[in-house]
Length: 451
Image (cartoon, rainbow, N blue to C red; front, side, top):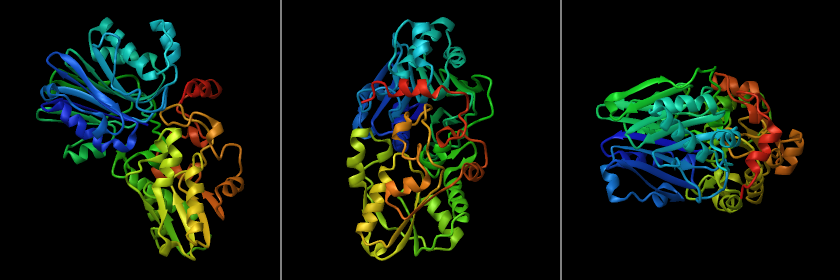
């Protein structure tokens, strides 16, 4: 999962920087800003969080247009060695996107005559080649959409001063924009635009926002024929900020309803309901309200440890060790219903259960506000292999024993869709992907060379 941002108007590079800070939760491995100043595109970025990775040079203050990205690696190398925005081969077009392209290797060989190991580089080279052929960034993106297969919310910048934002025909990833007097703004999440006081609207699935040199010349048009939107269920479950809206649904409200629906199927007795902070809190509120059990914080979360789920594999254990510590007075002698948003690899749940028992909890019952994650994702979340998924091939009781909890209950597929109130991409939960995918082949493509 990544975050993208764009701005056209005065102070563009600084505005994109500010938007990226509001999207930091979507990627913490690397960050970058590409800006147009003096007829050429400059780039600032590198590994780490936005504040350490993006050092804007003096000329960036003159930029009239800029795009930016925070990276959570779902393709190619982990860490800060690779970052977006990415330049095309001639440096005439820069692209940043959130998602994954499942046919990037085939397109690279067939159309560009080279083998790509990173889908972002393929997208940049392809869009630039089509830009040179068609003469317009809008036309280049429309032609690219005809070729690309996957999930993407994308921003692009040309050296001629064109700015564009595009969303794939299935609308798997979020993207919103705001137009006003002297500016055009784009961000992966509505909350980022809210914090800047901007009146936003969501770019629809298969939509294209094209700005030809000036915010006055921005128009929303079609990128490609759209299908019924299939937004990613995991966005609502985990990734979105709770104050963001995706396909008309606020993440916090959806998560509260997930918790309520989970509670309706549960009868276990307990003294308190406790969230796994912070992503389990909204669902815990709903669960506690529905069952009338007190909501109590039993875990302190170190806010400087980052999001362990989106950290590279070599960093996850260390982040988890630093991330949570029990509040012993709240846990001692209590029967605890622990609410988490999801269980993917099982490492967080296992560590927290052991931590609470060591703090004196009598019982730990884990309740998960989403279904078991049993299949890979190739559309923008870093879980490309069934082998890493704790629920794949195991019963609920087997997972409970592995996690060390007294009982385990998941929200079902139907309950999740009903909580959100619309059809979703449920591929990772064992439901359907937006379009057919060759799981065996893509597992090899998206795990090869990852380190």
